[in-house]
Image (cartoon, rainbow, N blue to C red; front, side):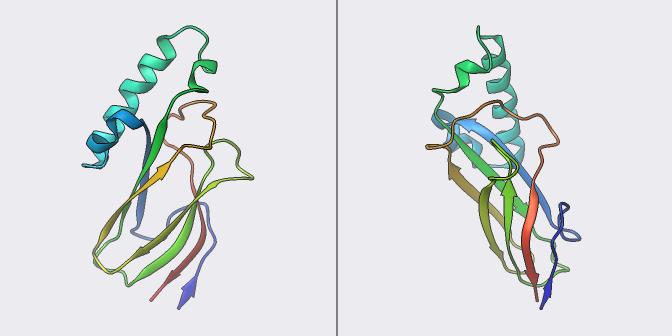
Length: 132
């Protein structure tokens, strides 16, 4: 079993995430493209409101994470850190995917005050990674 610690994804594994308003979560989990479009539209609306980014503090949102696992790799298990507020205290996503499977993970932003909606490419870090 291999283990790697890196700010880049393991070879062939891609990670994309979007911050979306809770009211549109059911649409966002349909796919990566949908989630990113919803996030872009939400960002545009929020930035047009007076007092951006302070108007985000009371927004209810979720984080939708898409992990694509190529058929050429074995089982992957690991943790991804998303620095939504602060890099030293990332939101943790536990990942476990069999060969050739893709995963959609949803994180409730409930207790996390949103200070801004990050632009692409959004940062993340593999905190732990194992493969077989």
